[in-house]
Length: 242
Image (cartoon, rainbow, N blue to C red; front, side, top):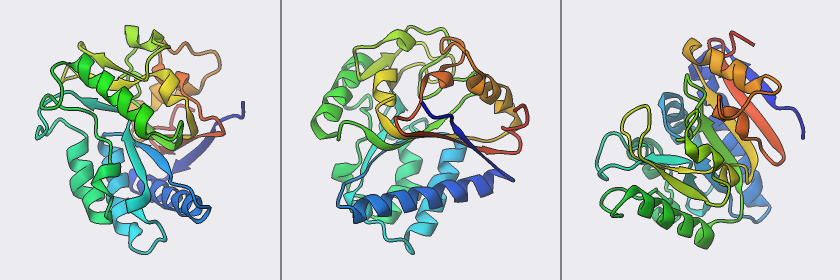
């Protein structure tokens, strides 16, 4: 497996612009080759900055967003209009601006869609099987200060699930407690995995994740790699312990 590529940018703003530009290039190339790209989105402040840059830069690109399948790595299992959901800001700042086809935007279930977090996870897994392309072309992931990715947290049993696409989380260490997350087998079916990390508060987790021999049970970010490439998009703060 090839070593991860590490890109260090001077600021979180520069990082967001670089990620947005790179994603638009990848999507345009895939569409020019006649394929329908499948991408996985993440939440958090740096992802929201990337989404705003995608909205800004898409008008001058060759990407047809109505022909992109859009998925989520995880989501908070709350009411559909809750400000805790990742999908709301993405929809407002990005997806509605660029003309994404709502039928191709695969939001994870909310409490209005499923009777329980487990039922929501099962429904999303069924949707992946039905509408997914078998792998993500690009999967974007944030990293928490504890090294978590998606809603896979250190020491939690979901880290060892190897026979499901998505699972429920009922005891997230950061609120809200109930979430739906893709599992390692699903996340690792990605041609290209992009970690988006900013701020000194994430520096230790980044260093642990990139260190040789790190146990994914301690630092879940160490457990995801792309089938073809893995890129860490960092700013000066998040790269400060490398």
